[in-house]
Every structure is written in structure tokens, then in C-alpha cells.
Length: 479
Ligand SMILES: *Cc1c(COP(=O)(O)O)cnc(C)c1O
Image (cartoon, rainbow, N blue to C red; front, top):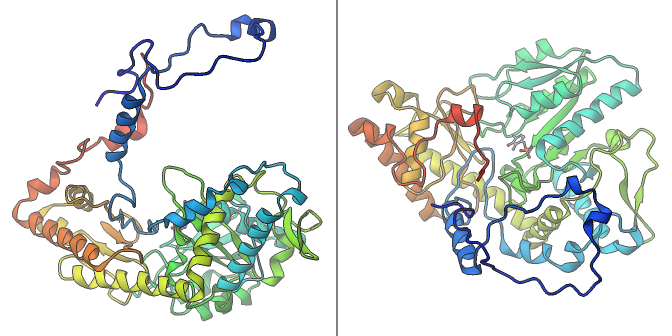
């Protein structure tokens, strides 16, 4: 396919700019000549060429609107179109970041109510909406832990993180100056309690726990874990990126968590991927409220204000709420579903994951064979042993069947991991055809391994050189 620059023909236009009706001034009098270019190398195409070019490109892309996208730990769920309608209201899109509070009461009200709703759903005292991603939320949460110990003059140098954790967890701990110490998982895929007991001392700021963890398993000993961490004065942090496993069923605040970060761009159906804006609100228990970022949105006699007057606050973690429309979409989602809908969402996410797990169990190794939550993790080691086919080959072959591959090689404690998160929005027919494809690939691995190792065969680009792409990315078009 040609680049848009290659389709360019001099003088071709998609639109015409009206004649200027203000007096012209020579730019040279305002801007120094050597700073100006004679011409700008922009493509010149007709409107039809433009439409066809980008429509063709969009067809080569893959997204939730194009097909099943079971990317484990990423919750690529359907994004209801009503969210877009509401976020597109001009009162939301036209807001200026410096608008005075008195001029954006509706917007502040929405944010305030979203904070209250999240507090209720997750059992926390209060939430901040400042962080713009999950990892940013983690950082904010760990900064609050640090501030707490600094304020009390306590020297805590370590933070505990299970071996199943998302890579952002140790990174967030390290950014705040803590040494990340790994806690082993037990045979059941939960926290090894003996190891936790051994590591949890007064030098430890807390434990960052993903629950359900990245194996898709609920931590059965969560109350005991909370007791052990709290007994040494530490905090229990919840990585709540994938809360569609339990929202409406249980509340992290009730389980003993002191801090939680959510990913609105996962659990609450706002689009993500491609680095688009996310939102990583952080909730805290009562004893940590004073450390929340400022300014906070407060309600006073029915109106909403920004309040900076929190002396213990960690300060700002972001200048502007540029991701405001993500909050509008999440708010719409919560209001559309209501409490019963949120509960049903979790129920369906768990049911779908267990359905896929049971269907694929005869064909792929399942290292932790127990009921899962919103995702299940297989291992491709049987295929490696029997036919020399690796998980990466299976993932590439799935593309030929029209499915986005699951997350692979994560969590790292499972060799040749295949991490499937079907989520709640998919129909039984879709799950069946995905499972049929996975089963067909397991058969191909035995009978016709070449068709798997040489996949994909049907995509616009075939197997890419991952190393070269990472080391020497060529993303620039130059004439
Ligand atoms: C996605 C995810 C994160 C990171 O969230 P970002 O928004 O990508 O920064 C952290 N932890 C878990 C378990 C996740 O799934």
C-alpha cells in the first residue's frame, strides 16, 4: 500500500480555505527569516483519496470493534457507544483547563460524584482522579505510603511484591526509593504465607498485591495477608487494574486494603491501547485521606470547589485533567449499569473465563487448575515438548483465524504462558469460535507444525523481526 505522501499530486486539494478577511501582515516582520521554511512537505490529495486511504488503513488495524481481543490483564472489553455520545457533549469537550470553578460546576459535580461512586463500589474513604494511568496511580499510591512514613520519621526501605505481579509494581516502588523484594507464590498460585511472614518486618512499607492476581486467581488468604502486613505497621496496596473480576461482589476496603488504584480504561469500558488517554484513580482508607493529591474537589453548600488546603498532601501528580472525557465515559458506564449491572458484569467476566478454561483444558497445560476469576493462564509447554511449537507461534497462528492473540509470556512464573481474558461482553458463540481456533491450532501443532511456525499467513505484514523493530525502529517517512 502506498503512503499518503506517495499518493500526493501537486495542487490536488481536499478542502479550500476561504479568503482571508483580515489585513495581511508580513510574517517576516514578526518572525526571523531564518526560522521560516519556504515550503512544508505535506501530502496533496483529494477528499476521496484521503477517505479511501484512511479507511483502508483502519481495515488493517485490529480493535475491539473489529473482533475478539482476549488480551489477558488488559480488559479489552466493548466500549459502549453511549459513552462516546455523552463525552461528546459540548459542555464537556469545550471546557478550558483554566476555567474558573464557578464556570464548570457541572464538570466538577461529575468528578465529585465519580469519586463518591468509586469510594462506594470499592469500600474506600475517598478517591483522587488525578493519575492518568494505572502505573501513574501506583506511583501516587506508593508516594502516599512514603509520605506517611516520612511524616512520622520512620525509615522504611523495602516494599514487597509477589512474583506474579505486573512489572509496573516494582517500578513504582523503585521510583519512590524503595527496594522491591519479591514474595514467592505457593503451589496454589497465592501468596506464600511463610515467605511473607519471613519478609514482613518494620523496614517494609507495605505489600503491593494484585487481587485477583495475574494468574486470574483470588487470594484466598487475603485476610491473613492483611493481618501480617498491618501487624508490622505496613500498608496493603491493591493493584485494581482489572476490577471486573469482583466489583459488586466484594470491596477491597472491606478485605483490609489501604490503597487501591483502578484503571478506568480497563474495568470501566473506556478505550485504551495506542497510548490513548487513560485514567488511574486512587482510593484510600480513612487514615490516608490527608495525603491525597491536591487540589481536591470538595462540595460546599451544594456547589463544588477546588481545595488546596491539605498540608500533608503529596502535592500535584498532574497539572491538568486533560483526560476528563475518560471520566465522563466511566461515569456514564456506571450510571448506565447501576449496582446490579456492575455485579452482573463481574459475574459474566468470571463465567466466561471459566468457560474458556474448561473448554481448552484438554488441549493445553493448565498449571493452576482451580476456579479462576476474570482470566485464565495456560502454558504452551506441552506443545513445545511434543512438537517444538512455542507460545509465540500459537499467538501468530491465531491471527490467521481472525483473533487477536492473548497476552503471552506473562505472568513470568508460568513458562510459555498464554493468558486469556475473554471479559464479560462476549457472546457464547464468540467464545466457542475462539476455543475452536485454539483447539485447531493444538491439532495443527501435531499434524502440520510448519503451518504454525510460519504463521501468520493472512495478515498485511507477516512475521516481524521483533528485535530489529525494538533496536532500530524505522517510523519516519522521508522524501
Ligand atoms: C494494565 C495494568 C497495569 C498498568 O496500567 P497502565 O494504565 O497501563 O499504566 C498495572 N497492573 C496491572 C495488573 C495491569 O493489568
